[in-house]
Length: 532
Image 1 (cartoon, rainbow, N blue to C red):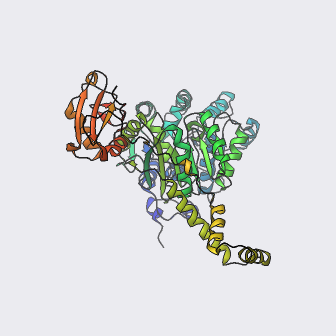
Image 2 (cartoon, rainbow, N blue to C red):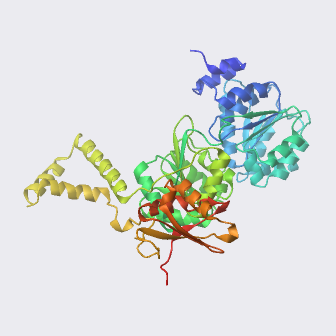
Image 3 (cartoon, rainbow, N blue to C red):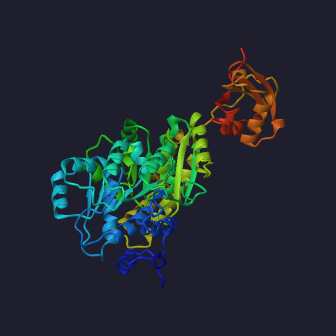
């Protein structure tokens, strides 16, 4: 069978390594980037995590190395220790049959003496974090003058982390004849400025999935939920979808620790990952997550940079990130290696507006879904319990258990169905009815509407925002899908507005309008208080 990589002009040794890895056809970014890099072009590749970008630069990097030359020839700069280790590991696999190539990962948190010994023995490829690379340069243990190729992996992340000065120092200190390759999930102005300064004028730009910045394999959705209800909503989604591995993102370290404790107390196999943890603890957590010992990992954006795990089924944005690029990197952890992925975002009020801006920027739909109910969770739990019972019953069961079941049935006045129902109830860990808290608890009977059958709503914008009645009607009809005739009296004041809608459309309007924009202003809408 023909291997799709053969048409890229690769050597037999590299093709053999690719075949060993099980790859048959190049991904779009590999198909475009590999020939360009092998031809010596400087390129900027815009590609998300999970698109095969490591091999897109890794394969031509290994092809470029002369095994007979023991000097440093290729350097890959990575934002984190985890990514540097992962990249080095992939390059070692590619160079498997090209004997004599030595690859080393260097990063902070590891004893520098270990790295010094490896460098002294000679390495042709280094994958490292900018800070540790600078440390070696200043010690004189790494020489840049022999570099043929410098690669920036996740360049946008490195700039976000404040590595710009280190990157510039490394690029400025290497030969002007070197080849320079950037890979980035996003393309901010800072990346283009860096490119203009350090790449050749004829650089090539390679983009994959230009239609959007988030993978088609990821089903993106959001639920409107108050902060106080987010943990309960998360629990329901975890129970219903049963992802093998889940990543939950928070904006603060404190939030990560608090949520980890809360979910752990609810019986989930969960751990935390953030910047205050030691490198040893981080490594331990990551190994447990990769091996499925921990099925739920809660992390901050900084801690998760460079995190590379292929089997993440779902990503949860417990808090919406301030930076759009963080959102792109977060959900890029799922839907990888040809698999489908899910992302769920929890939003309320202004957070919904932020999601709409993200949706516009990424050009990928983020659909609003209804929050799962107690009944939904209970149905799934019952189904799983029945499957467990049937699976157990089809196998061998100890006689003592059969005897106990017989005694229970014979010695009880209850019907066998009632006894079995009690067992199922115990196994299901039933959802408490008190957990069901509708998003909108009001019966809308006392909002001060002037007409019967109508509900008066409060909108936190008015004449100051230049709102007009037609703006209100248009926004409500457009966002909620109700007809304009369901909108009644509108009273616009300086800083707020009252609008009446039919009672049967009220929940639909409240659900759709919170965080919506009217004349460019994000608004909050809620049932009005009764008139005095």
